[in-house]
Length: 150
Length: 394
Picture 1: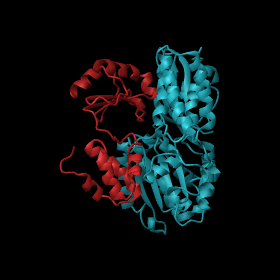
Picture 2 (picture 1 turned 90 degrees about the vertical axis):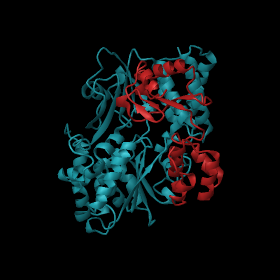
Picture 3 (picture 1 turned 90 degrees about the horizontal axis):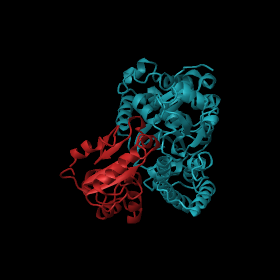
Picture 4 (picture 1 turned 135 degrees about the horizontal axis):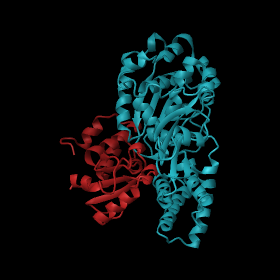
């Protein structure tokens, strides 16, 4: 989280017209990790839109979170090209290592998600840990990556 | 047909995408100058119609026809949108265009926007394409500095603003009405058509939405004429999977799959045996070896699958993708993609029942025939082929 930045500051930086809604929600997500219900209410008030309208946008897009993020957020690409490069095996390896299931959103410490293609197929399998992208990942190379974040 | 002509990739890796001078030195913006000094929007539209250029995003609609529909509209305000959302798994040709030849794309956008009579253009960029955003942003600033954009372009009466709008990760936003909803600050759900965006698009104004690769062909057409383009049109192919030459390759349009895979693509990777190819991304049909003598359709992505690949992993990849990306607006797609993915999981675990086998056919039919937008139909394509051609249920 960047110091000194508040939701109010982010809001005042932009004109309150509907096409700024998505960029603003994205920005809040980047700074605070997610868009909380309280923040969504502030956004709704500023843009003079209903809370439902703001929240339905916030919850729709993959790049905006509406729940507090886990300490360790792991995403593995499950596109065809990465799958042919053993990304499914990588997911199983991580599941076994942490004793978690991909797609389980309730673990506050570590979350593992299979994600859609990021358009980096030449460099796959792709794994993202807390926003950092790792290329050409293998079942054995994940341990070194996870150590960086331990 | 002329072989080896490169319209889009000619200078990739040979000029610095961050320097407008490099692009100007190899004849960049000559087409725009020609458009402004020697042509007019009507003449440009004629050339594009003559070129037979059709959409490179997958649907293949005639570009000239789409533009004509917008140009004919009487509204004073119009918009041009460059669709660079590109979220189809296995497709990243548009990203490479933006990263390697941002000025070619921008020149295409400028000419396209002026041709349809709009003063504002928007690039809808995939939210994950951060590097492309920086490069395109810099290209726009440089074009402004050189009076190729902005007010009174090159001393003419034409004025134009170009903005970049970054998406936030939603496959369905590649669909033009969903894309427009997304820019307007709504959920990226598709709208009922008609009215088509050409009539009632962004902020209710006539809008042309074109794929980035389509637009990158425009400078060549303006510079050399539509007839010339007709003889040498190219397409970008994205090769992936168990193939020797992986990556993006530009080749004449209309090539057979066999030529693309075994000649351009160099054939199978060492020690791998061809099983099938999926053409067009996750929404693409599957082709067995005996079916390869047909032209490559759709977005140009070819995923080559070898005989040792685990079909269950691929089924989970396809069905999981559409389950995640279904926008939820219509029930057949929201429920159908969900159930298909569940059944794929049971199939992978060896727990599939006879009831599941029947249900698959039912779900596929429903997706193919009753969903609101094409995403639902796409979700059925690969699974349908896997059932019929690869006999996954037997």
